[in-house]
Length: 196
Image (cartoon, rainbow, N blue to C red):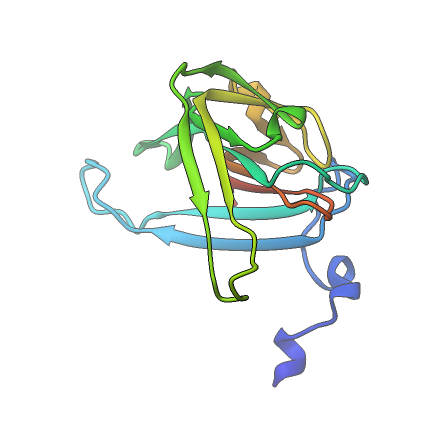
């Protein structure tokens, strides 16, 4: 029956096991997905696999309406996954700050920890709304790592502790993206991995 799997968003915290109470933040979107990964881990026998969770969160980056040029910023943090056969345990090992980029007026929201001197181009045009539609023609700055100090979750990808959150378990930041749309409050999107 639909009433067992489809529930009102207003009762999310009372009808699910989702806690993440340590943050005490407001999110506009939550997606939790757990999958078992089957593989030969170079152990003596083929194992059934370990389970890894993916937590996707979206929240407003403050309360101010954005008035700058359209843009965005993103980073993908690097993690190695190592499995300990003897102890049946999976480890996430920090492997670097990851590639990052920002465009438009994103510099007022994020700082790239290291930047490349060469800029790249982003052109985005669509005539679906007619010939008077606007299109963007902006430069993108690329680099390594990111520092984000706004809501709902601030982080600095320059170290393992800077992009790991602890609550009832450890959550490892995989991806972050903030979209800057004129006339709207910017939305920050996060993807974390965790071991259930």
